[in-house]
Amino acid sequence: MARNEEKAQSMLNRFITMKEEEKKKPKERRPYLASECRDLAEADKWRQQIMREIGRKVAEIQNEGLGEHRLRDLNDEINKLIREKVHWERRIIELGGPNYTKHSAKMTDLEGNIVDVPNPGGRGPGYRYFGAAKKLPGVRELFEKPPELRKRRTRYDIYKRIDASYYGYRDDEDGILEKLEGPAAEKIRAAAVREWMEMEEIKREAKKAVKSREVVEVGLGSKILFEEEEDVIEEERMEREREEKDREKEFVVHVPLPDEKEIERMVVEQKKMELLSKYASEDLMEEQMEAKAMLNIQR
Image (cartoon, rainbow, N blue to C red):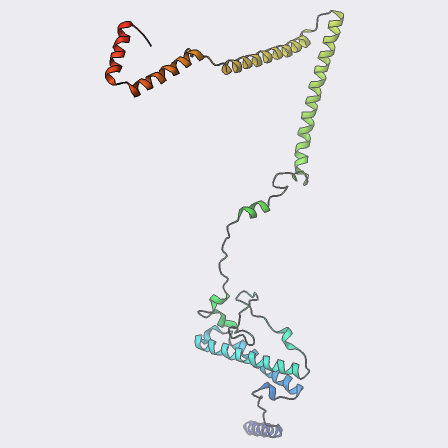
């Protein structure tokens, strides 16, 4: 009995569905050209229809198991729908509607960063990749960033970054160096003041002893004498250095130098020999040399 009721209910549902479909208007086909539409509401309706188709195909292209060919076809279909959407948005603006192009989605890489993929044709938006199509061979390289080449710094770039901090002029601004150097500076200053006070006390006692003609204490006198000895030693050392410098400046001649007369005689003798060699023969020169040797003449 229940089976017959189910059959009747099923037939009733089919009959009601058929009647509702008869009442509906025939399905309208989207115009091929956006310029053929004259109604703003219809243009907005066709844009919404394209947006739904793009959404379905974008959801489908996320599946990496569809295969390379199917992914490429889906990506081509999505880009075709995007171009058609742009035409309808432009037509909506012409009919006085809102500008949807201001809020259009940007192209992103695998990490979600916005990238600019130029369009070689120069018309409309550039070709885009969606979902698993970004990981296809030859497509991944488009989204990979080229390796950054380390540019060698020039001398200008090096000196441009040198400021007062480089030379240590701002080391005191953080306060750390002041905390470290403060106690040490106080100790050095206290030691210098204490030494100066001791020396002043020694000088004062020495002056009193000289005026009163008394003997100075052993400790104080030894310090004064030690200082005087240091001064004497320093003066002797400086004197020795001066003597050594003066000794280095002196020039000692170990060979006797000729005077002006001797130099003049040597020049005349040289000219005489040149004239004789020029106008006299070799035999005459030999006879003259023999005669000088016999007469023991040196010139």
